[in-house]
Image (tube, rainbow over the protein chains, first blue to last red):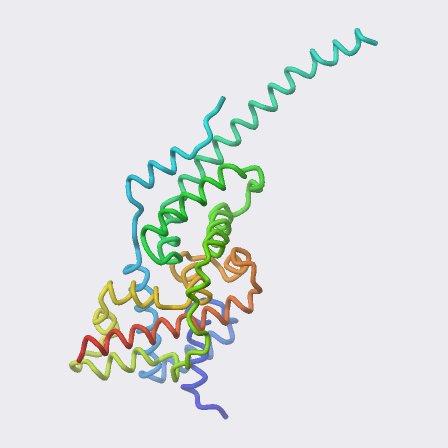
Length: 76
Length: 203
């Protein structure tokens, strides 16, 4: 029998990507309910993803926006 | 027969005019839809490219090409994915592959590596949200740019661009299984880069 925390680690990415089957989600959550360490690590991974998304958010310059609009092909 | 021919032409002209008018209308709508997506396209492009300047050029080239080849876009399909496919192809064509990093970097021990490092080097604070905040925005942007392109492309499309595995596979023209393995690997490389940055700051 595999170490349940090692199995839980394997399930983390697909769990957070919402690609596990219902049965796998139930199994993963059963372990998470019992294991504080894994729960913390999952929570960390989730906040990390949100944080990375926030930190990498960016906007194009007004100049670029104008340049893109100018690329439109004029009607003749 | 010459007479019949004349009649045909007279009939054809309004049809042709109609067709041209419809096409012009479709094209204008296409251009407006594409421009409405430009913020989202830029956000992804910025991290596929190595710098803001590269991203600006890449997005301009993408839109120039998209406007020229708008007829090849199938109405009703995912336009953001279509634009990103043009963009990633241009990015690869730009020869950025030359600076491909060595692919055989050792894979860090496990997926929890970063959390374990950050929480052990901390001051007893173990709230996951606070642990994450030990990383600065600059740490994250530079760690992401250190991820080799093959992995970064997938990571950026899925984790920043919210594309599905299937969309990312189509955009990059690789199998879904490859998307999944590169994504997994890319996320780990990112975390290792972040752990390195955090450790440097701590010393």
